Picture (cartoon, rainbow, N blue to C red):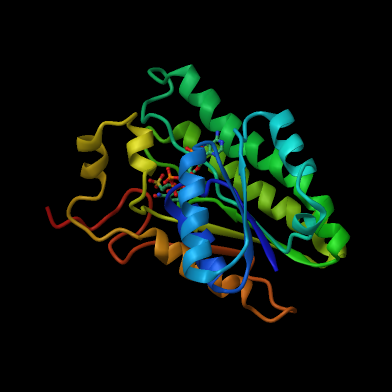
Length: 251
Ligand code: NDP
Ligand code: 8X3
């Protein structure tokens, strides 16, 4: 079994890579930071003795995505599971104060990147005649929150694309699932606040957020369901989070 995971250099993608390897998958891990992919590959091989293929590219570059997928050796093209995970939030501002470069980064990564990868991997899944696409959306794709405008819009797009992809894949026997997490402590807030660790840490003060392993638990559950069962859409939050605006913080 082979799994293709985007954004495996940190957070959810890294944890999912490890977990799928534990479940017997050989994994294709992707991201921009090659050295982090190399250390993850070493860890997976050492702990789980699975094969790993590293592919480092920027999902915003349609040509690089196509070249990287075309260049996979035949063995690695027999993909069973695609996890569209690479994504980010950049900034937290009103529309009138927002930074257009930040918007482009989010739209290009979270929407266009997911589309480029899916466009190139879907034919490989179709050729297999089975498989599963797991899109990592967000609770921000179900609701909006103050100053979350463009990030929320990109995740609403992932929500819509997941539904559309399920229709496109239905006759090919391919499952399409969205996992839509609430707040989880990864590099997400550090990226959102452009390296400001104080601001990033503040997001998770006073409550226990989700962890990357919580999301890996869910992916493990989803890929191990019986062949005839597809979990279409899952919103997962920590106990303290009711929705995007209400979190029960103790400090
Ligand atoms: P991290 O910042 O820890 O991981 C993001 C991953 O995406 C990294 O591996 C990064 O790799 C990759 N990535 C980002 N931009 C690009 C790019 N242009 N090209 C290739 N890879 C890229 O955050 P999370 O693990 O938290 O985020 C994973 C997904 O989960 C995202 O889609 C995020 O929106 C979503 N999410 C996160 C939540 C949270 O609270 N943490 C909650 C809900 C959803 P590299 O930098 O090496 O390229
Ligand atoms: C990440 C969750 O609500 O912080 O997608 O935007 S949230």
